[in-house]
Image (cartoon, rainbow, N blue to C red):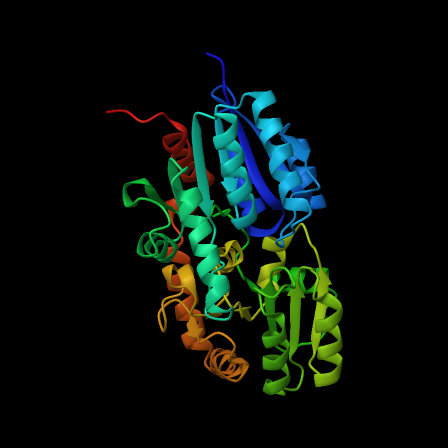
Length: 376
C-alpha cells in the first residue's frame, strides 16, 4: 500500500503548535502516512528532532505570522504551487496564518482532504471589535473549505462551534501529547533541575514556559514577581521571543528577580525546579507546558482563558485568575507558596487528570480518523 502523502503546514515550527505538528507526524504509522512539514520558520530544536525522525521539512520564508500585504500573496502562490506539484493527499494546517493560506492553497490545488487544527483562537477581548470581526469572517470563509477541524481542548471546540467557524459535525476535540513518564518533582529531581538552571539559592522558584510574545504576556509575570517581594524568591522564564529585550528591561526597572533561561530542549527535566508553575497568557488553547507541569507534579497558577480550564480546575488542580491582573496572579502564587499542603493536593489531583488522552498514540488515532475519506 502506498502511504498517504500529508503536508502539515504551520506558520512557526516551534512552541506549542510546532510541537503538536511534529508529535503527530512522528506518531503516525510510516507505512500508512508520509508527512512533510511546511513552515515559515523553524526552531532549531524541532528542526533537529524532525531530522532525527526522518521527517522532511520545507521552509517557505514568505509564510510569516503577522498580516503582510507583501508576503501573504507570495506565500499563497508558493504554497499552491508546492501542493499542486507534490500532489499531497491531505493538507493539515496549524495556527491562524498557515490555516488561512494553507487551506486556501489546498483548495486551489485540488487536495482531496483538508484538516485544520485550532490550537487556540487569536480572537480575544484585548483587540478591537473591527479586527476581531474581520478575523472571524476570514475563518468562517476558510472553514467552508475544511473537512475536519481538530480543536485542542473542549473550550476551543465550544468556541469554534459557537462562532460558527466550521460546521458542527466537522469539529473534533483533541488533547495535547505529553510524556506521561516525565520526571516527577521529587527532592532529587528538584535539585538536579535547579543545578541545570544554575539556581543555587534555597528560596522558592516560580517558573514559566513559553515564547516571549504578546499572547503569553510575560510582562504580567514580571509584575507579579515584583509584587511578591519575597526574600530568596526567583522567577524563571524558559523561552525566547520578540519581546525579550523589553521584558528584560522591565524586570530590571521593577527589580523583579527573574532569570531568563532562553530556549531549552530539556524542559520536562527542568520543570521539577519550580515550586509553582505560572501561565499568565492573554489567550491560549490548551498549553503543552501546563500539562507537562501537571505530569511533573508542580502546582499551577494560570489565567482563565480558552481551554486552560480543561485541566486547571480552580481549587482542585490549580488556581485560575483573570488575564491582565498581575496583582491577582501574585496573590494566587503567594497562596500556593504559603499553603504547601493545599498545593501538594492540587498537584496530585492534577497529575491524575492528565491521562491516556494526552499521549502521542491518542493523537495518532485522531489524525488517522481525520485523514480518512468520509464514508456514508
